[in-house]
Length: 339
Image: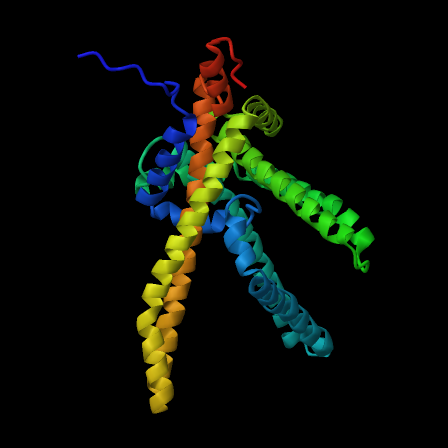
């Protein structure tokens, strides 16, 4: 029996295939979430900002206390106790240890980005053996990946400076112009940062899957964005919506999970039971930490998987924005360009 002709254009939007594929990849490979957490250390754009901005004040204060004040205090103690060789060298050792740990975390962040790209791009499952192989490949490419991250971070900071400059010029003036400039600056910064994040993932794909040099990777990534900017925007909007829905669902699940320790906490207050108070606080802290780790890891893995699949799909050709498909359907033309 012949099927009736559909009134909807038969071209299948690329995001209908890529988005479910990316979600499936992220959900079925929880081992990649660990690498997603470390990858988020240097990945400054994309969907993770929605989660990061929520904890911005706590994170900023915590980093100042843990990194800034601690190092200053150790150095201060070491400098004052310079006449006593042992305390001074202990301070130097502590600073050296913190520096080594800091650089190790940054290096593993670069390797983690490559691991996710390599695992997702190979089309294999995130098994331990595959991940070990991906770590070896990413480790060999550590230097170019690190340079790529430095360039992207510098570009993001430069973008932040340029879009903040007009705002700084009107600070202190109580007028509608200040609000308008603030909104425009925020939108411009968000869009540019998001595209820089996508550019970074595309460049990583060119390096990891095609053996491109750093310059070639930037060139190929920019070429893909320039040719498929409309499809990229369509997919980015849908990605943002998915992140919002996932965040709401995750917060509902979190409230359900923290309800039992909340009840224990209230009982501990009423009964003045310190042991019960410690138990409820410990359970609450564990749930929050596990939730943040799982949510961050899943979100970052989903982001990398999405744009990795998109990069591979663009390489196959035949990708057409929805606006072009609708235009072709309305005008019955077939010579619509691919960009």
